[in-house]
Length: 126
Image: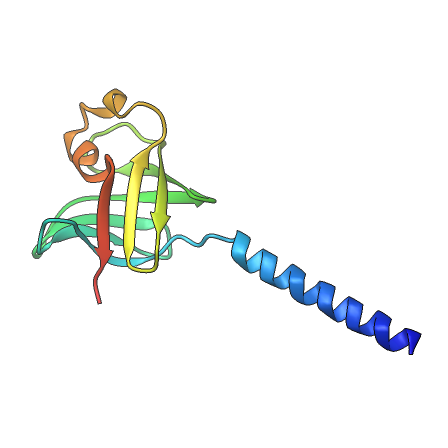
């Protein structure tokens, strides 16, 4: 009887650990996202850490990114903007919202990024 209780306790602890680990892990979403208020403008994030900005069939900027927890970092871009700029993000399964870490005004010279990541929401395209 004592061994059964110990076994149940160990199994319970393992299950709780797995659930907590899954809840604590935030995985950055990949795919095609359409900017709120537009019909064919957005971002595509690939699992290999690359992204591009598009409108219709035109691609404006490409780059790379990294993610640590809920922080998205643009690590390179072809738009001539500074790199290693950080944003927090939230993803609810459909909507992806970015906000600058720090003062957005510090990045206002990079108008494209400023307009696309300054408290902007995108919807996952099916």
